[in-house]
Image (cartoon, one colour):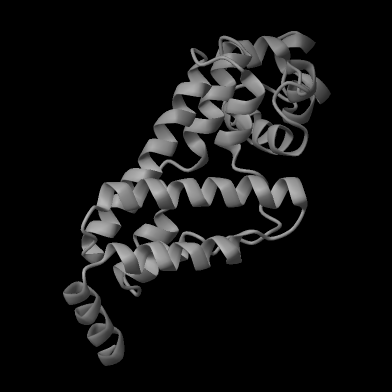
Length: 203
C-alpha cells in the first residue's frame, strides 16, 4: 500500500473515512462557508487522501448535497415529535432557538450556491417545504381553520428571524414568537381555542 492510499499521517482509508469527511464538512461548511472550503482543506481535516475522498464522493457537489441531506433528516423531530406539549405549544417551540445558533445551513447553502439546479439547492427546497408541512400538520392538530396558510406563515417567520438574528447579531426569535402567537390564536376558531385552554388547565 502506498502513502497516497494510506492518506495523511499514514492513516488507512476504508471504514470511517466517509464519516470523517462528512464530519469535517459539517464543521468547515458551517464555520467558513461552502465556497471558501476547498477539497484539499476538507481532506486534511478528515485525514484522508484526495483519492480516498473521491472514492466516496464524485465531487464537492455530491458532498455538499449529502451534508445537507444528513443535517436534519427527521425535520425538527425535537420539536414536532414531543408528546409533552400541546399542538399549539409545539408550534411555538419551533421558535425556541438560541441566538448563538448558526444560520440555517439550508439557507446558507442556497445563498452561496446561486444555482437552483445544484443537488444541494434541491435538498434545501425540499427541507424548507418539509418544515412548512410539519408546521401545517401541527396547526391542523391545533384546530387551525387554514393549517397550510398558517404553516407557511410560521415557516416564513422562522426563516426571517434566523436571517435577522445573523445580520443584526441580536436575537430576533422572541419577537417572532410573539407574532407567531398572535397568528396562531387568530387562525384557531374560538371553539378549538376554548378546548385548548381547557386542556392546558387540566394538564
